Image (cartoon, rainbow, N blue to C red):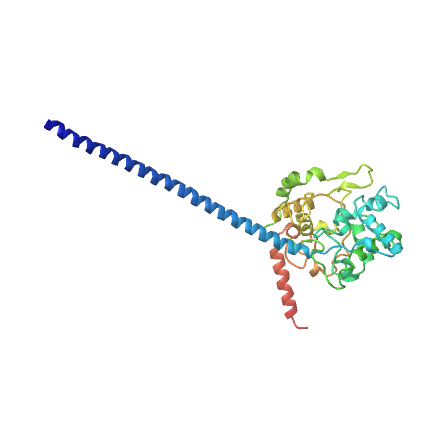
Length: 363
């Protein structure tokens, strides 16, 4: 055999092996990088899944806690269980008076025209039975009671008339009038499942924590236009029902709204009220406003014109005035503006300090 041919054969074999080796190395490098890529993706996927699972677990835990909490909320005594037909009729009439006050006592009311056209239901939702909806859960159990606003022990007759004169900007009912007796019978019956002297869970209005700043009417104006005006209208005058006797959505300011002596005129009350009730459909389980939004909307609404009331007899002991009562005189050095919009924490701190000092002062 030709020596040159003999040398070519091993050379070709060597080249072929080198090519195979090179291809193998390239393949292994590709496998390495592909594996690295998929490993990173899979790891990230597992991490995301873990994160999602954690989030689902936290949400489920919160839901259980919320369910356990709301299960303890007060529920009104069932009117259907009343066996005395006379009492049942009176209680049902009282409920209708609460739900549709204006039909009986409004400007076009069938009994007499003594109120502004709003219903008690506008402030005491679901006829006074909604949790944190300014309900009547603790009214019967806690009355008669001493009230600092009047400086007197008040009974339910006085309490109901307070709402009529302030929130409905109206004239009081007589103690023996059918409508007064019916409303009291209703309030007493639905709260009869709460022991005397005890407060029910989720009764009245939720107490929102004070902000570290003053509530801002300008921010509240923008929020009102975005979240409230569709029902209460841009001018705040609400929407009358077709019968023109009551409001589908009540006025929040103006001549037909509650006056300056009403509880909701204090922005802490209004903020706590709308937090878990507004906009329409909101609840304790599903709020639609943040705390700050609630405070700012309350500041805006509370800063607008409404009927005034003579409050000269209110708070005979001025040290008992709430921190957000906006009318002087005060027992502290803070201005009416700060008492109206806050910040309230400094006012509360001074009130607490003064109370402690008074307790230490010898008689």
